[in-house]
Length: 605
Image (cartoon, rainbow, N blue to C red; front, side, top):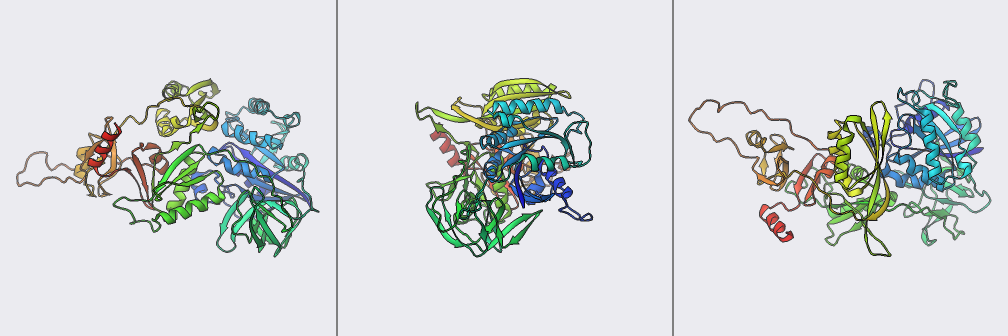
């Protein structure tokens, strides 16, 4: 059977997963009366909640006798490591671009990786039914982007389709027939080359995706580079340098058929399959015939740019909600994650109770923390810090710089530029993007963007869209002003009292409500002034036998400002931590005792 392996790549929210839904429906994967949930490929609970793709997924469809293996990739920059690995499995890519938003930073990132691998792209300008769409302008943008990324003449001669993934049609022209996705299927079959593999050589496959299965053990997914794999076949795992990882036996071969993985007895070179039977082999390792000695070259992954400290939860409320609280449990979980997620780097600190976790961005690390808390872990998380490098020639300290593209209503452009300029950002380009909006392009240090998202949404009344992607390293740009407000810190343990919180409302914004457990050193609110303030949220009303006018008025509290996990991580300062448990997210000072805290401040000064 003819085979085609293709990845769908695009910026976040440009409609990849919705388009794959329609490809599955129109290829006959589902029965006519079968009920299928929207975004069927986003099977992970967090993906469905957030409406984003976190993990790359494989599926396959049959089109007129050709099997098309489709890989749906994440669109968010923080999961770029996932996209980089996936491109080694495919022979072509469909670049999806929003007809209104155009080519955004993540489009540039993934397209750059695809062009470098020599893939010939198919461009699909999606959502052309949007009233603010500019498909011809976007088409020119995409061509300019390809040219800027040093595309070859063959890659620049890309075919283009205009489509609406949600409505399920694609056409070679904007005014063409809005019927179905047949033009896209036909183009994939004609434009994407069959896999370049050698069926006569011994079996070899590069492991690209790793997952744990409760029944089959470790599953390794990849494209078979050469030969044939059969159930019960003896194989070995080789690391990138060709050294032996383990010898083993293939216990199960799973082929992708629609949304299902179907057990098969054998699979041929060029097909994408998941193999069970190996326990130590991991991502970027080669699974091969015992007679072979060479590993398949694996693409190096871009280094992490953000790091956080994950430590044992040592607050007075530790162990009340989670059942996985020891450093050994946290360590095992983190190293298990690093096996399958090559964009993460885990290292132990001197204290052994804390671990440095480095990744691509705050969202990637926040997703990991959210997964861990749902599994019953309790953690203390530090403020994100950037990963610095030293220039090998000059010894100069280099910091990561990001490209930032912002779409805001015209009236908010001034305040956004002013705020980012104070954070050492440089304006590169600015111009109208239609419908009363301005597009601003800047380059800014990664550390200046930590904690800025919330401020940005406030400044733009929630209407602004900020996209960012790692660009390069350059010399350190100097100190950046941090959080302007101090915090209100509890000076004792107990449950908060409505009367005390009511009296504290003049001091600032509360993060806790009445009747919540808190402890000495826990942050209960934001001070309206720049300094930190120790307060007593348990102070009850003094009862006397004297009545006076106005004393018995009902206490009416302003609802507290509840921070999400990402907001909490972005909010804390260097001397603060986020306490994460299965049911709660609390902010606290690293040193709980106020006397010891003041002593540390005097020493640092």
